[in-house]
Structures are given as C-alpha cells and as structure tokens.
Image: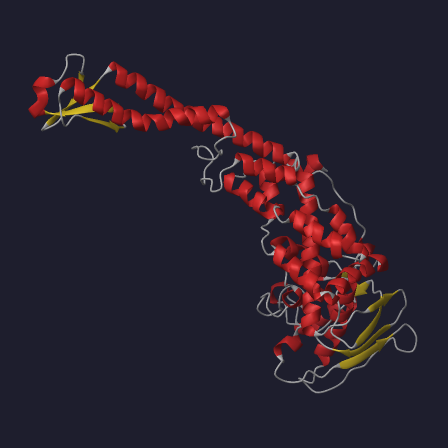
Length: 448
C-alpha cells in the first residue's frame, strides 16, 4: 500500500507508519443526497459552514479537534460500546464545569501539532515550526496531570494514559533552537548559544571581527599619524583602508592601492586580507554548520513522530469532548439512551440548527416514535412553511448526534442504533444530465 501511494502521489510517504482497515458496517451509512439534505458540514444553498450541524457543534480550540469533530459527524458509529464510551467522556465534562474550563484554557495554547509533525517528517519544517512544536507540547504534562487527577470516565482516563508528555522533545528544541528563529534555516541564527562549541567558537571569531576593525583603525592611525584613516568594507573587494588625499604623503609603502576616488585613496594590506579571510570564512562555515545541526535535530524529532502524533490525537479527542460538552450545556441538550432495540423514542425534540436562529421566539418541540412494529411509518401533512421538513430533518439529526456520542436537543431520547439514513427532502432539476425535478425525485426515492 505504501509503495502504491508513493508511486501515485510522487512523494516520500515514509512518515506513514500504519494503515487502518475498516468496514462500512462500523459506521452509520449515508449517501451524498442525505449528507447534502441534512446539511451536516455545509448548507445546501450557499455551501457555507454557518447553518450546518458542524457549525453548531464545533466549539473546538484547535485545528486538530475541528478536523476530528468533522470526521465524527461524517462517520457516526454503530458500535454501542464505543458510543457509550464517548458519552461517558462528554457526560463527565458536562457535569464538571471547572474541569471543562481548565481543559479549554490549556487547549487554547495549542497549535496544529499534526500538521507540524508532518512537515518535520517530510523535511520541510523550519526553525519556527520546531519552536511551535515546543510551545504546543509544553502544556502536555499539565493536561495529563489534570486528567489523571480529576477524570473518572473510562474514555478520559484512557486518553490521559495515552498522552506522552514529550519532555525530551521539548528540552531538545529549547536547548538547541533560539526563541525567535529566522524564516530561513540556511543563513544562520537558528542554533542557540551553548548548544554547539564549534558554532560558539566561530561566532566568537565573527563578533571579534567588529572589534578588530576599530582596533586596526586605532593602530594604523597611531603608526602613520593619519588622523582620519578609516577601515571599511564593500562587497567588491572586502575590507579596505581609506585615506584622504590631504594625508597622501603619510601612506606607508606596504599599503597596496586598490581604488582611487575624487578626494581619497583606498588601500589593502596583507594583514587586512588575512583577517578578512578568517572572518568571512567563519560566517560561511557557521551557516553551513548550523544547517547541518538543524537537519540532525529535525531528523531526531522525526524519529519520534509516532509518539508526537499519538499525543496530538489524544489532544484532538479531548478538544472534541470539551466542545460537545460545552455545546450541550449551553443549548440544554440531554444524554440519549442508545441501545440495540428497534425503537426511536424522542421527547420534545428540537432541530439543533434551526433553534439557533429562532432564539427570540419559541421553538415548538415535537415528539417522535418509530419502531419496526406498528410504528414503521409516519405520514406528515400540512401546508407550506408548517415545519414538515424541519421535523423530519431534526429526527435524523438527533439520531446522528446520538451515534457520534453527543448529547441531543430533547427532553429525553432513546435511540435504537440505526445503520442507515436516507432523506428525500427538496430537489431541483439537473439540466447538465438532462433530468427534470420530477425525474430526479423519482430516482432518489428509487434509491431509498
């Protein structure tokens, strides 16, 4: 599989360590029309995130958590044990305001560790990326300690155990990389003083060069008696001594004329060239050495990529559970009972998205009861704008929310696990493929 990906993607995929196989029966199946009609991650008309289920549920603090929540919504579970584990985590955070807020505060400082470690693994990360990793993993020990001390649910305790504090990675970065590295890693200034004796020595030579210019000026003025003698540098011929023409008669014989100006002459000396070679050679050498050291540090961190990814995945899970608990508390959701029965029994159900837009007016809740006996079918009639589509969609969304482990907008709910959702709500003609509105509706109903 890795060889196939490498061949088709034309890139190094050595950072992919394992592949997971899954069966479609692990997740609640929805076709594209259902996903579109239920507006899970974007609205039907404007394709905006605002107005979708994801928009309501996503109060995550990190990009990692936001991606994971979207994956949860797109892949609801059918395994009751996994659903109830998630519910346990959300329930605990729902009931423990201080734990929820403490975790939310710690998560707010995290950057996108998953993307950063991918850049490190493929060798495109710079000094700023390494500092970002260090900044983000700095909170790992605090999050682990907080969960270990306070969490009681099976899921949160398992997450706490899976968090690697990555202390060695943070210490390596803090010891080796400066606090504010430059954008590029090939021009020096990346490695911290004290990490490499060789880099420190070369820097000492370079810094000594600045004082050396002043020292040469003072010595040459004293030797020659030329009061305004000046040592300068340009890119054409490096360091030079400049003497105005009024002091021309005091120039020593060992000065080598290099350039004539309108009112001055420029000279070089053997000593000046030797020192210039040492200083400029040190600058080139330290830049190359810093790059080699940085690449070695980056490669060393890449060897721990799986550890870092595992901790990042644990943080994303925490972020999702905190978000779901926060939304449940704010919107007055309840924990649904999920079982293997054929019953869907929702009391006072509400549409999770629509109620966000009618906060100034009362959203009328509705019950729903379905089973595989006398209640296999509900026939809903009423005029336009009466809420028929809203009622059907809210029933589907409550089922879906229950099966991702979320609380649901109702006074109570019992959800027998559903393996498929279908919708046929609203359609428009498809002129590109020559299908009228009626034909499209018939095909969708036939698919169901």
